[in-house]
Image 1 (cartoon, rainbow, N blue to C red):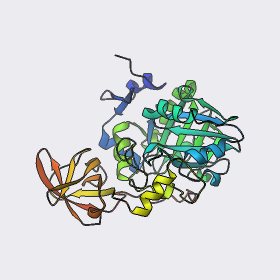
Image 2 (image 1 turned 180 degrees about the vertical axis):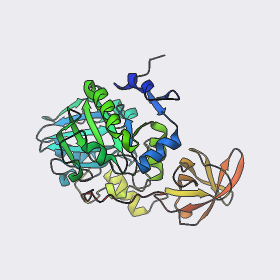
Image 3 (image 1 turned 30 degrees about the horizontal axis):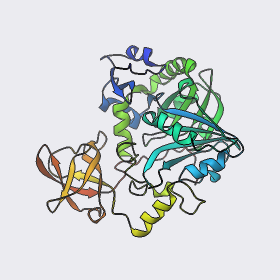
Image 4 (image 1 turned 60 degrees about the horizontal axis):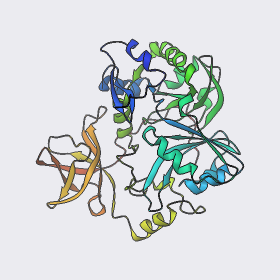
Length: 377
């Protein structure tokens, strides 16, 4: 049995207070699922701020004069829209339209990019890209040398301003500073996140990560900043309808079915999966992701089957009791005929058929901060 991988911050977890930090196996990594409890951590991010160790994520560097053209062929979004200093959410697809992974692309310069991929897909993604590299384009895996911290919440900019001379308030969403200085360490600072709140992601050398982690927690203590584990990260992203690979996205679920058509530019030059996605759109989707709310008492969980008229019409991809809204909610991949709002459906929970209905998503949408710039189109 192989040992679990650990991030550079693992030795600091047990110093964060009581009760003891609870860690789990997450994609081969020993990661904290909670420090103080999911509800408390979730509330901190919604109302003050939370600090996440997400150093298990993968970072690739892509360089060469044809790097941008290569990414155009490999991803669904339009890389040509990026200027240096901008980031973009996108997806890589198989020829049949299924998803290899969803990722962020950072344009560092005209011929240099950073790709941020899901931890469980690092090896798969690297191979997928490597075997298709054109001559003159170089791909390097920087994951082992890079730590990633996410500072998220309405007070994130206030806290960050105390540990840097960079004007972080002026940084618009999906923009970044490649050579920022945080807590005396050189970092790439990005106004991005995975919580539905304002916030920043900090890419830092692995050796510097413990210092940045500890200094940020100290700087934010008066504002209620606490460390947050993967449990609250999941409930936060769920409320904001942000997809998780392996649940809302997979090799069997297309971006269009997942409701991510805005990130699929079918009018750009050819990319892997384009033909299948055009066909899927022209024929009409047979299923798509929808929000559901339980009417009967019960919590929908991943893979619970969903029925209508005694026929299974799909299954739950993610579900929980919303920590913010206190409602039993789920995301479910359903036959298209049953995705209209207020449609009655039934979820099988522990052998019982419990009533639910289709509801709007995202379940939670924050009020924009006054110091936050507009997201680029």
